[in-house]
Image (cartoon, rainbow, N blue to C red; front, top):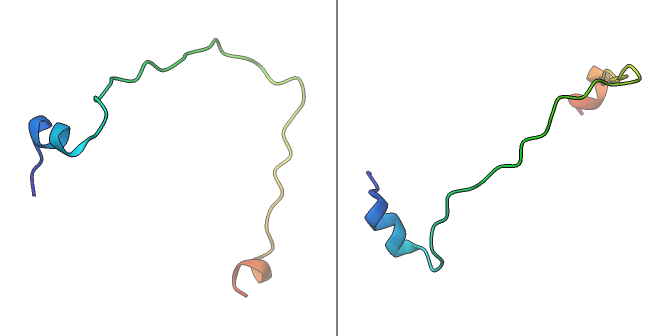
Length: 45
């Protein structure tokens, strides 16, 4: 199945708008992140 922009616009009730993402500057963490490692027993229950 192929969809053209014309077909997609007929399926939408609202006009299709191109998103304008917000971009911010890089930041550096002040503290190290701690990521817990899940127990395998919890995954396979």
